[in-house]
Length: 158
Image (cartoon, rainbow, N blue to C red):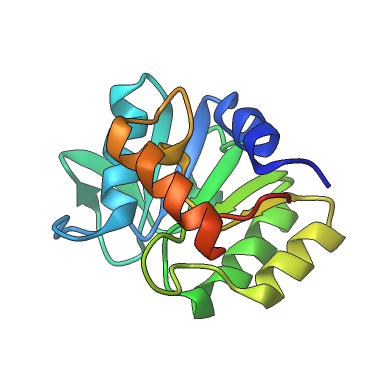
């Protein structure tokens, strides 16, 4: 196991990232904030939502397999009961870096998805948010990381 800081740096070193759970109605959706920030910071980011063709003026894909050229890493931003299916798709596609988003509430973290992913050799960050770590962080997210690490919503090791 490595520290979450090391795992986050490895995750964010990948430039082709998919974000699941991106909504057509972005207000209050963590996935949309993650998608936008990654895009603003120069990542080649793909929105995943089987019920949308477009999000924020960009093409949206129904699943990870539909992204042309594939992706290197995935942020799961859906309900936890969808996380295991996404993790299985990541394993099938050979994706080795997955981050299950969690800040307030249960977020997207699924113990079954975490266990399955790690058994498949996937680096799984099971909590927190990519926006809490450089180079995508801002001051507010750094404060959230501090608080959520102490409350267990951001893991110390993965």
